[in-house]
Figure 1 (cartoon, rainbow, N blue to C red):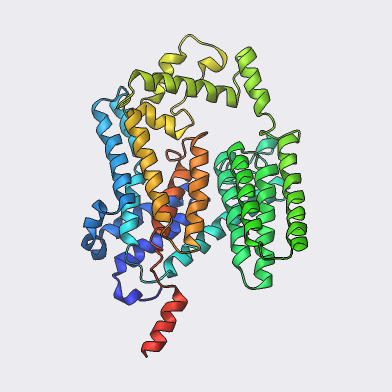
Figure 2: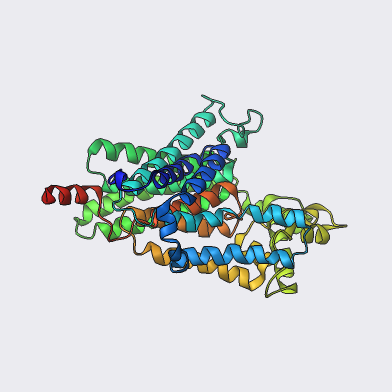
Length: 428
């Protein structure tokens, strides 16, 4: 990296381990745990981090993350869960502490070299996961603990289940399309468009994760809007001709996702109807039960909630003596906003939304492609949090923290590698 000799070795190692976490998140839980721990140790040994510690209380994203994790820790005082369960649940949110540490570690990056490396590290990991998923689906390989030859829905699963893998593959689709638009070499454009096509086929037709499918469809809409806005100066027949081809391809894929025999997205209405008419224990029916219970629990303690880790305890009490979907219980309601509401009441929801808003505000100050990368996953994360507890979840939560923490260092005033080389040549 540029100017590496001017920075301490612990800082360089901390940044390197942060990039390793970004690579490992879609592929290896153990890899994330090891690399994240080494990142934290090296960051805490870096003199640059300690030199800038005051920025913890001036950076709005850092403050928001600290407020949220602080409120969760404080709720140990009034939690209705057992001490062991509450502490275990709180530890799942320890990833929030990494965010301020990442902001400190990457704070004084003199060029975009580290974020450029992070961009391709993330992209290569997502591409590898997608290719392995396609290979598993076609029966060429049987890689990963999630893969099952007896359950057709698991054919495309590799290292992550259909929810996590669907979300990150949808992200890959959007990033590949965006990178292809800005690529200069024709070979690079073709390769990136091919990756985007494989990714959208994987998430819509192979993976069968409803959250990923919804996010992918939203991405398609965003891409269409961007496409037509960018071609306002092109001849109308070329603009509308190209648009018609894109609409035909994307429309066909979406139609297949909504109507194919094995599509879980197509089964959504049936699952809800089965729950409403016969209390059947379906995926969507259980979610409706969880959402209703969560609203009821928030109404009981609307200001500060029931405390960290209380969802399972409270759900178990509400599910007692019931049958079917009404008897279902879990440790979280599969909705991060409601999860925060049950644990911390309106205060918790406000703090969570506050953190998301501060990240969005900081995102506007980024230069490309960091702005697009942060926007893409922030959008997917917010949408996904309405159907899953993504901050709590290991894969989605760690990807969110490390992606945001690394790429928010790419402020608009940071020179690129090319700009810095040119400045060095002028100085010499």
